[in-house]
Amino acid sequence: MFISAKLTHYTSMMRYFKISVVALLVSTSLFYAIISFNMERLVNGKFTHVDSIVKTLEIKKQKMILLGLLAETERQLPVLINDSNLEEYEVYSYAVEGHEELTENERTIIRVMQLSNKYVPSLFDSKDVFMYFRSYEGKKIFTHELLPDFPISEELFGIERCSITETCSIYARPFQLIDRVIVSPVYKDLLSGAYIMSMSSPVRDFSTKKIVGDFVVDLHIPVSWDHGLTFRTEKNNSFKSTIFEHMNINFGRTYTREHITDNRSRIIYKLSSSNIAIEFFWLWAILFVCAFFVYWKWDDSRYSRNLLKKVLISANEDELTGLYNRKIFKEDEFIFATSNKKTSVIAIDGNKIKKINDLFGHAIGDKAIKHIADSMKIVFGYDGYLVRNGGDEFIVVLPDCDIDTAEALADQLKSEVRSSVIEPTSMRVSVATGVTEKEGELTRR
Image (tube, rainbow, N blue to C red; front, side, top):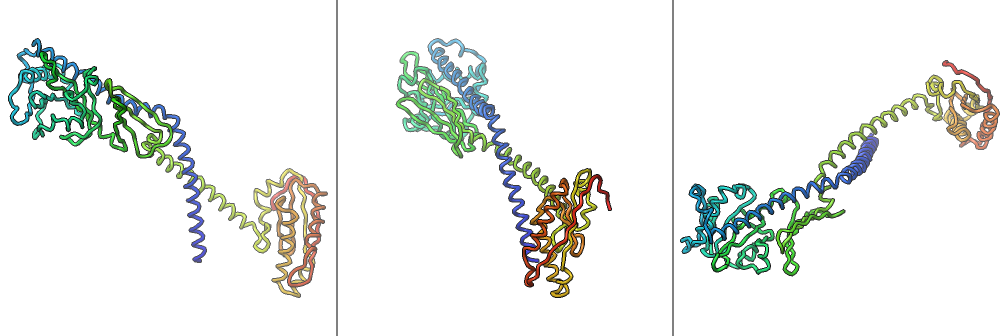
């Protein structure tokens, strides 16, 4: 009982393992086909997200450059900043200790920031963008919003801090300022702790032409990019590339999108097909569950049909010989196989079986009957219906078989039965056969 239970459990486990393997193969194939067919669209969707960020960067950059040019122009010839309705637009100043007094250039900058806040509010209202002015002349930071506990210090204007952001125009080389903008690599913000990219545009004194400060725009890297996205900066001579790349699992084809941010900088976004596949892993999981369920139901139905077939076969099977019993004559399968076609019937009768029973007992007699049945299986195979009619009587029904072939098979059976003795006796058994041919319908009995 215990061994039978273990065998049943093992068979069940193997069945579910087979279903799982088939579901895995089917779901993976479907997933690969779906992703491959839609790969271009999915990649373009990813690039669209990057393009929108770069577009925001570009728009802010152009506005920032215009602010710098406006500040230089208004310092030389004040026109727009004389607007009397600018006072309601706040600009907050954070000064290093001892540098609280405003310079003329800084007063002009404040008026320009108020003016831009009035007429170009879109420069300030983005949650992922922060714009400010950095004054080297007066060691100050000007913002359009109040920032409590702003960490203003001399270090913000020093070369060490500026080497991290790489946006301090006062330390830039002339060729870096040809297009009036510097773009930083990705670095960590002091205030928020988030990763940002910065752009700066210089403002010069109209008389000395020296850089007195620069407008700076910080663009926060979206939080949604944190999922496996890494970034690094590579420098080739004086050219700088900020590379965004997913580093979790990279295989398959790599797609690249490149954007020039200034005359010495660019952003490169790399995406492999494996990143797309990982992002849509949930689709594979759904396909696997569906494939497992469908195949399980189909296999369960097939298993039930096979089990029913085995039960039916068992009901029509002779226990001793494994041949059909007489019930087979009433089965639709048998009637259909023998109806409206030529069918040969061989009647077989065992000889000396009663003598064996009397001399050696019924156990040896059963061996003799099984020997005849085994000989029938050897001669006829699966070409017909082999039936034990009762005792030592047998019938072979051969659909689509003519009488001459049936007679030859009957003679072959006789030889096969006589070819060996019944152990542990030295007796040989034999069979008598009769062959007939049926034409037309076979009716139920």
